[in-house]
Structures are given as structure tokens and as C-alpha cells.
Image (cartoon, rainbow, N blue to C red; front, side, top):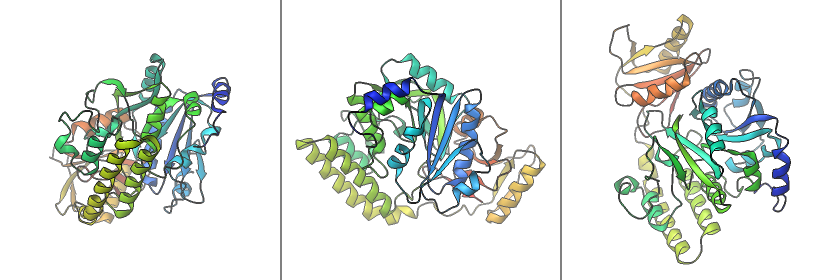
Length: 399
């Protein structure tokens, strides 16, 4: 962990009387400049009327992220690492610099609504025992992401989840499942484990818990931090009234051998750190079995749904003349088969330009359109389009 044990209480009292901002937002980026571009537009919209500082820590991206984004967002503080420090270390390195009363750790492949900060600040102030706050996350096709609220891993729930059988048992009563189903996705209440894609907390608590554990390079650090917050006597909360889009997994190639090794290695590290005896043995056995199974299926899964659709799309484009012209040029360059929808014509893809669009409405539209059409997004003046091509997959970029 970043902070030395024994100093956290003193530092916590110091920062409590020396914050100068309402909120500090920390985003760790790795090779997702176009998703981060949209994310920053939404964060800046949510920050209007508040004192908010935004840090982007770039983990040695190879896509020229900082040079591309820094001129577009002069108010954002960019930090470039010379090597990929991993998620936990990259977040920890800016904690001593933060001036906000509250801190939000946010993934770069997310979109948040304009009232996000208002809702989170009001909610955390209403709960004296609040640790971290998570929100309702949906993927780019509008599907609810159950990792928005999870239980502490148990031997049975971990085996079911890590073996890929979670959907078959998600609604069954096997003690506490991997995902917390006791709270509906639109409700709010205490949960044990939150997602690192969106973790909102008081800065004093961040110092008290001593930041992220830097032994976790990627994956598992959110489970560990959530659990350590609970061990301090706080309660983590899920806020179902605030919905965000999380395109999910853009910084890593899911179902690849590297992803599998990193993910299961993180799970094993968490077990080693927090469990002992029979429970630890059972969890280790489940992790190893699931890891072997996942590695054997990684090559097969990685090819599913990766190719662009062969069908011709009917795309409705919103925006001014310049927006539409730029979008048409990008689509033609990409090689996607499409035709532009007329005013009253049926369409299967809606391309919306931001930041002129209300993000809260955009997020609602993505949720409502899940079974009818896809929504793609482009920032006005940007040379890219982001969105989701198929359900349960990473987002896509046209540039």
C-alpha cells in the first residue's frame, strides 16, 4: 500500500482541514484515448458549478493518448508514467496531490450523467457510516452490469463465478452468491464489494484505509479495497438511482491468456492475503481449476463476435452539417456497409454527437434502446466514434 502504517490517522485529520475542492476525480488510462475523450466530456459536464479537479494518469500508453487529449482538455491534469505501473500504483501516486473533500476513482471507458456528483455527495453525506459508494453500471448496449454490487467471495460463489457458470446459478440460493441480488438494480443499499470502475469516497477514508494495495497490478484491487473499508467498520453502498455507462474492459483483451493469468493471479493474491485454513484451501483449489478451464477456452472465446457485421446498417446521424459530414467520412473510411436514414426511415443504429447532448438523457436512451437499435457516440470535432457492436462485448472504435 502507498501510505506508511501509523501515519494514516494524523494525515487524515490534516487533509480534512485542508481540502480546497469539492471533489477530485482520478482516471487511470491505458491505450483508450477515444473512450477517455468521451469520458472527460461527461465528467466536465458533471463538474459544472462545482470545484472539481481532474487527474488523468497515463500508464505509458502507446496510442499517443496524452498528446492527443491534453490540448482538448486544458483544465485536466495529465501525468505520464514511463512504464505501466498498473491500476493500483497509478491511483496511489496522485493521492497526496488531491485537494478534494471527496475522491472518485473512475475508469476511462465510462460516461457519467450531469447529476452524478450531486447525487453521490448528497448520498454519502446522508450516511454517517458510509465507506465507498458505487453506482448502477450498464454496458454500451444498455445491459445492467451485475458487478456493480457484489458479495465477499466465498468458496462456492467463487467457483461458480470463475468457472463461467455464474449465469446458471445467479438466482439460486447458494448462500451469498458472487453478485449481490438482495438489492434491485434501481434500489440503493449496503453491499460488501464495489467495482473499481466507479468508487466514490471521502478523502479522509482514503487515507485511513491507506489507498490501494499496490501488490495488485490489475484486477482484484477493488475487491481488496472494498473489503478493507468494511474491516474498518464502514459500510459500502450501492446507489441505484445514478446510472453510468461502462464500456468494460477496453484496456485489456478479455479472454486472452494474459488477461486470464492476471485475473486469476489477482484472485489468488486476495485469498492469500485475507483467508486461511480450509476456506483458503477451497478457494485456491477453485481458482486453479477455473484458471485451467479459462485458459483452455481463451483462444476459442477470443474469436467470438470480433468481426464487423457484414449486413448493411441503416444509420441515423444527429448533429449539425459539419458533424454529419465528418461522421459519414469516418464511416466510409471504416468500410462498414451502411446507408443514412432519412427523417422518417427505420434505422438500426443511432449516431449521436456530444457534448451538445445531455449525458443523462444519452445514458437513458442507451438503456431504452437495448432491444431495438444500437447507439454510437462521437464528440463534436473528434475524429472518432465509440459504441458497442454486440452484447456482452468490449466497445468498438471507428477512427
